[in-house]
Length: 331
Image (tube, one colour):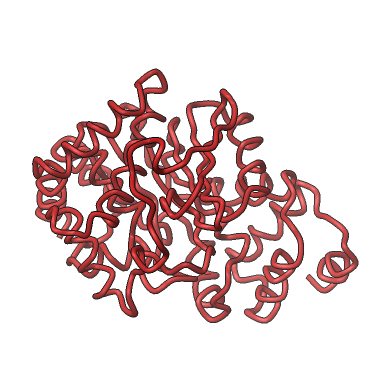
């Protein structure tokens, strides 16, 4: 590791095989916490390359607990995190709205590393018991269109570095890697990124992997569609910038999306959205993210129809019914 660190500090790059070997070494305890912290900190000072990202991804997927849910052809909706906005669990709430609209979702998530409440935090706060049992995951999809995969259960490397990530409290390349290592390897993905450079990196990766994808970024720095300003959506067909007012939404301010100071605070907002008791700004933000996820599944669907489907999911109580059924299966 010392030699690798010297190379990285000298602004050199890893090739695909080197990146894969290092991450494999982390998973088996080859390196101590100080070495891991030094290694991941490099990527705060420079961007990760496509070669490095590919190697890291291959290492994690090679070591994952395999789970085949391809028969459901699900979507994953996830953000990289690391935008330092401390929003409520927008992506997670959007997953239940999309499931409420009748689409299959396999959400891959973890505890928050750079925010108060990650997807796993809000799930656990509701009594969800994480599982790798394929029968239970399929039952969840069959009965409520959604299954949740807690990342550390499916990949030992993520569990190995969890403590270091939490102690650092800043975004690392694991924020970049997490959305790419859903053990199901879904064919359809919607991903939020914290900057446009990262968005283009994912675009190249998804182009290579195939399938349908949308990469979203709010131009004021959110790793999701925040409605606080213009946002960009990148798909295989190209890039487009959207303005909230032009697609029927009022503009938010940052405080509208604040997730609070604890998991309990974030869970209250999450619950309010699904019960259709949230503020209009909170509700709209979840609806617009769900709508673009629905469009990722059905690229030919007009945006206003996707927004309508997401709105009906919330206002009819279908998203809440999905969540309540999900809890009965997964507690």
